[in-house]
Length: 542
Image 1 (cartoon, rainbow, N blue to C red):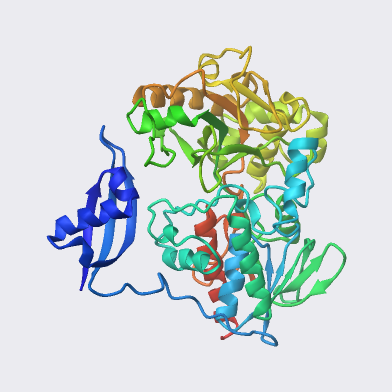
Image 2 (cartoon, rainbow, N blue to C red):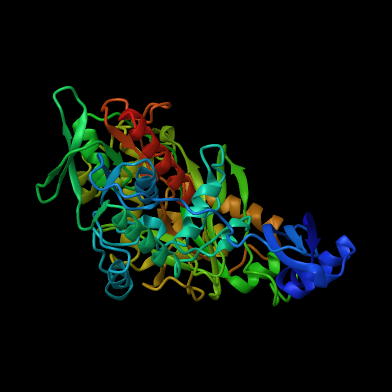
């Protein structure tokens, strides 16, 4: 017999199988020895009150074994010799598009400008050690995309767009812990995700697809009728076929290439701000309402904050408990920060993006003084001669670049990041010294409140005041504000038809995932990759 129970238990009960079995036996009024298996279907932590509970949905097998597999694996057939589809980019959007194409009997040719996920490690390490950024291999470019080395969080609100459970099952099929199928906020970790990505790549190759590294796409091939019939790579090679464009939110050269080719693009709203880092023990104490913090049975605590200041959202983004702040620049003269956590979430720090909603209309409004100041820099003005055009579809990208360049200048023109104690930032004071941080290239004291766009810094400061009133101890000199968090999403939307998912100007081109402006994280990008694969198959009559 199989029973389904919804339980609300204390953390030690949830964490220990023998205690959970005893609790279940009491709930069902049966002998615990008759329970042959327990399967946790859903798990979440409720820390809203002083006493922290764990909510569990449990399948209880009494007198019969549980099914051996937690999920049914996807069958990937051999697609050698089948119609060829070009997938540009090997991030989550591109990888899941390629796997779905194989399911549908089509042969993916994946082209990735960066290196394989293992080789990327050396280039990522060089950013911290040598302050050198390889523009083709970094935290954003390379196999796995920006998600490979930035945490592996799989939580999404995009459930209306596609099958989230299918995406999680595919991750499990390629090596992820099946716990992600049950956790309310599933997480793989930067230490485990690379191997899973490698397994996905090898599955594509075993099925007859291709994955090509060091292959940057520089142009689309167009027929006389305006249909995309392939791509031209940086070495001049031409490859023909329909194109799924899944290049991620930092491939600025792709946006420029598309604009020059006459593609339909739109400026898109962003969230821009900083990384805020606290000691993880302090966040545990605040969130779990205990001076002892998480204790033995609870994970590193997460938080979510949201408010509105002067008609713009101010909120936490991509919270990384027990994690690190990492350098995420993709080229010279940039300082960009992001967050990541290993699977154990066991570092001394917890960090989150703290960002302000920024709309394209703000470019000619409150942001105009900052952009005018950026244009006074001859190097920036020469690189972006059209940055004064407040109607240009690339204007939000230029805003990102202006803020990243300012952070680079304030950081000493290296990957050292400008930083400030949280309380000094809120009170408009320069920090004479800084608390220890996880950001390995190093930080330098800087008056972020002075040089960042006032549109952002003033709203952040007020948001921090409100968050501090909501959670006693959150607004503290022990926390450090690190600039700049600018790559929260794509600054451009590559316009596509809502039904066919095809680009509105070029048949045969399928803008995909986060870089196209239609996703915001690993799972939503993966879902969009599957949808684009299905759209290409429908266009080909498969």
